[in-house]
Amino acid sequence: MPIEVLLVEDNPGDVLLTKIALEDSKISVNLNVVEDGVEAMAFLRKQGKYINMPHPDIILLDFNLPRKDGREVLAEVKADKNLKRIPVVVLTTSQAEEDILKAYNLAANCYISKPVDFDQFVKIVQSIENFWFTVVKLPPE
Image 1 (cartoon, rainbow, N blue to C red):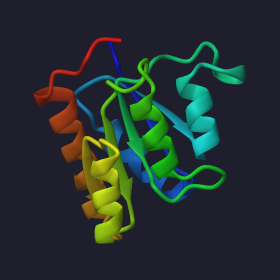
Image 2 (tube, helix red, strand yellow; image 1 turned 90 degrees about the vertical axis):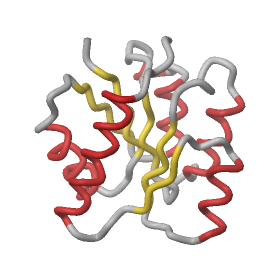
Image 3 (spheres, rainbow, N blue to C red; image 1 turned 120 degrees about the vertical axis):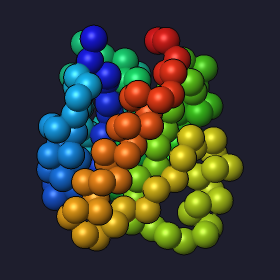
């Protein structure tokens, strides 16, 4: 059974890098991508065009998103009894202490600053994969 990953990311380059990093996976990963917070919440709540989408096992969430930012998405996910057990990995460019504190105060499972370098970005995604998909026991739907 593949691990269902929801990537909430508006930067096409970062989406591509994440896909490349996950392609070399020893684990079967099904990556779904949405570009903003409004679409993320529709996906998670299976609304509209997302009605038949799978329940994600983990969410990779950028903070800097159009329409509804990642902080708002994180707050909504963790406040929703049907979604709050999904691990959320904040994967964003911000290294601001206030963003890190905000993420953990909103119950993010971890916070990772995106490196600019391609090889480092791939290593980060692969380390997320190794930890969350092989070491951690994810909650059932």
